[in-house]
Every structure is written in structure tokens, then in C-alpha cells.
Length: 250
Length: 80
Image (cartoon, rainbow over all chains, first blue to last red; front, side, top):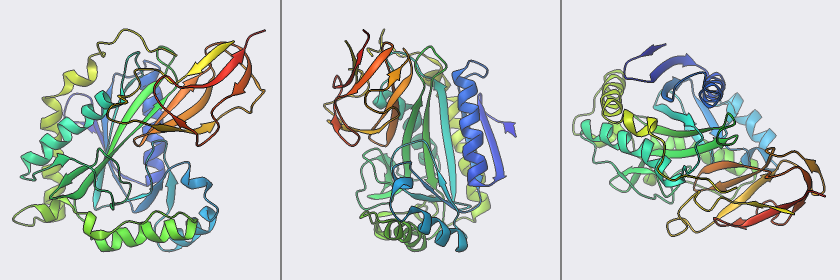
């Protein structure tokens, strides 16, 4: 574990389940005031990350067994959205801050989107926010390049403002990987679990495929980490500053 | 009676009109404590926990998977 921008902590070599546990634990500590707000960056072995509603689909158990046998263990996360694959082809980012009165969905998405898009542009990728309807885990705040999904953003707000609650904004960034095989894994899960949702590989890309010279994966990972750290250094004030609205009306 | 309301400023309804109740953590008619997390809503790939504003008996007015907007009353607490 090391910090290379204020509040940025990186971990590698964990399983997805271990990394999600670490993320939850860290978030709880931020909510409780035991840690300052910060950003986690992690890479893990291949896995399919799904949402709680998807874990209640009729064929969920069977889909998990099938994918586990195929080398894609299934993990459940706290954020919304739908299933997406993680692994050496991708990097996961989580920005965590105490849940504050007046926080809004849009402001918190901005806390992730702004430095992430800045980092991708530093790498020469013309990234922008936009919906990519046929991508996996599609949302209106996907990060896209050339109309194809490059990264997905999501949020989980746990607990209540002033009582140990936290907000976590996550991003899953595709650095490499083959869209065909990644979409096949997601579609297999959805079909077996009993969901109607399907994705198309034509709607998905990766940083590697959006650069004029295709770098090797290790060099690309290092370059992305450095670009993100630089973007976060320029942006740290955003996550540390409480929103201007005075009260959250519950 | 105290309303359990989706906070008015949780998201911008002009950009994102609707969310859904993803889950109720208590059954209709349960006794809950003030500040207990009673429901989870989902909007734009965000999940958000909603707390009971008072202690008392819970009445669910918007069921699981029901559509909500900022300001929607999703349940009530009978404090008597």
C-alpha cells in the first residue's frame, strides 16, 4: 500500500471480494471520522461484479456456479447499475467522503468524472461523459470515447449525514481487454440469472484501443496511475470542501 | 405522523426525473427507531439509504420497485 497523491491509496494482488471488503471498511472509517476523505485505486484478479438487485434474480445461484467454474467469480457490490467484469484489463477507483447535508448525486459524480476525464485526456484519449445504452452497466454518466464506453461511474450512500454515514463514488476503467470476450461473460451471467439485459461489444472500448500507438499493458497501467495521481493533485480541494447547501431535508 | 421523504436536494429532477425504491429494510407495520435506515433507493446507478425521521410504527406508502422523485413521501411513522 502506498500513497502517491494526497489521499490516494493503491492496492494490487487482491481478489475482487477482498478489494470490495477493503473498500467498504475504508469507507466506514471515513464516515466515522477515523480517516480523512480519500481515493482508493485497485486492480484484482478476474471477477464479475453485480448489484444487490441482480443477486435476487431467480437464476443467480446457478449463474454464480457456472461463472466461478469458468474463472469469473461473482461478487456483489453496494453501488447501483448492473453487472460488469473486472480483472487485469481494468482499474477500479473509489472516492470516499463523509455523507454531508446537501450532497447531491450530480455534484458527487463530478468529483469522480472531472479528475478521471482529465487523466484520460492526459493519455491522449478524447474522453467525455455520455450515455452508451448497449454497453454493460450502462448509465447516463458513462465515460466514453468515440461513442463507446470506456469507464462506468456509480455511487453508494450509506448511513446518514452526521452519524457516521459516507458517500462513495466509484469508477471502473477499461484499460485493455477484448470487448467481445468481456461482453460474452456479462451476457452469460444475465441470461443464466434470468435478466433481460444484454450488452454489445460494439458499445465498449478501452484506453488501449483509443491510443494511436498501442502500448503494452504494464506501461499503460503505469501511465494511467501517474495521470490520475496528477489529476487528483489538481482536484483534491473538491472532495474536501463541503457542499454549499445548508440542510438535507429528511 | 412523520413522513419518510426522499430528500428534495438528493438529485436534480430536471436531469434525472425518477428513481425507484430498491429495498425496504423493515416490513410494513414494524417498529423502527429514529434514525434507523429503513429503505434504500436507487437512481442513476446510485444507491442511497433513507432514515426514519422518528421512532414508531412504519407504514410503507411506496412499495419496493415503486417510482420516486425528490420530495416523494415513501412511508410514514406513527409516533403514537
